[in-house]
Image (cartoon, rainbow, N blue to C red; front, side, top):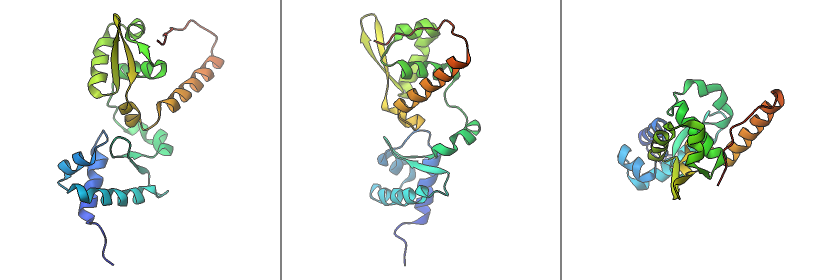
Length: 183
């Protein structure tokens, strides 16, 4: 029985999807790998089968493009090994936007300070956040790239954050909080 795919091309596709930090569309994969577009879909199907197995620690992520990612159940064990692409400041601003969206940029500036403008430019350049002018401020929202990058739905992240916030408030005495008003 002959195989339906070229093992070298499958290995190359796997290497491309493992190495990328952002999901790749079929056209991008074809350009990078020099594999014809019509050959990529059957190779992706083969990878899907391979990583669907419970004995694999990776999964083929296919929202907005393709990339290989660590399966959710192993993230907490290996996350310390991964180099963070985003600075703590960027993550802080991004988390405030995701948690309170839609949120006024002026409210984020009140919490973070003027560095917010620099962070916002970078987050927009990375495709995580979009802004819309409203009067003298901007309304900020996350984009689908946010969910793609973090490999989960933002509603799930909000639930986790609220749960962590509730647990923390039960452990500590009440204290003054910074209020960010959604708009």
